[in-house]
Length: 297
Image 1 (cartoon, rainbow, N blue to C red):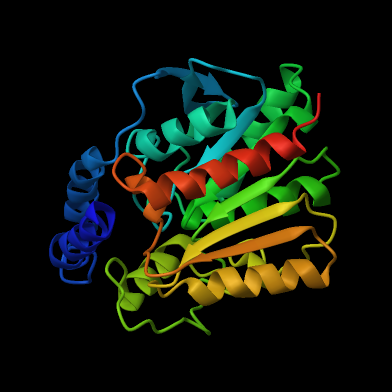
Image 2 (cartoon, helix red, strand yellow):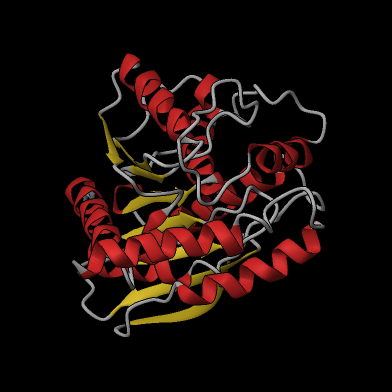
């Protein structure tokens, strides 16, 4: 009984206090400060430690679970490519570290509009290759991300394949943003978090004149053949539901091992509430099993 009430309370809080700020009425500087504070309610488990390091000239926050079984997850935070950071995503990364038994590395990749495309995928590839150059086996690396970071995870796998680099063992996407042109947005009865006008503004800032259908901007338009096994989780109450569905369909058409999970009556990247919600923890437990299953020694 308590959990449905908690879900309803969180949904209402986001609708009243988060969604209004993520609109065109507020400057990006205010949105960045506000979301940093909002993410304080997303906190990691106590048995996960954090430390900063540098990989490929990119600052990276490492989340290490107390009960570590091996493997590394490269996790890309969301925020429309214009906000968010490794720090804001300590909560979701910490829970993923605990459920996967892996160290989770969160790159502080460069953000638009100060650093538009291709800064984010350049940084993502630099961090991945720095791990490889340290002697980390690609089979022991998984890639994951939420929202824009979910799209970036797929873009990274595409770039690595195209550049002839070894691929990670799996990809996990939470509410991935895969079509920045917004040509087929879903229209839920309730959308507690996102405004389509705001995401489109962020897309334009990120692309900076590059067509929004460019496959490395919007990976749903790209060649997904040969990518690692893919897990996609999305809520039914979000405008990006079709982004997740279309990514899954496109990947399956290219014979990529793909699992799509739609969580009824949940919202954009609900996994950030893992400290409070059972269903968020359950989803991250599924992601942890997906990651562990595909890791190679």
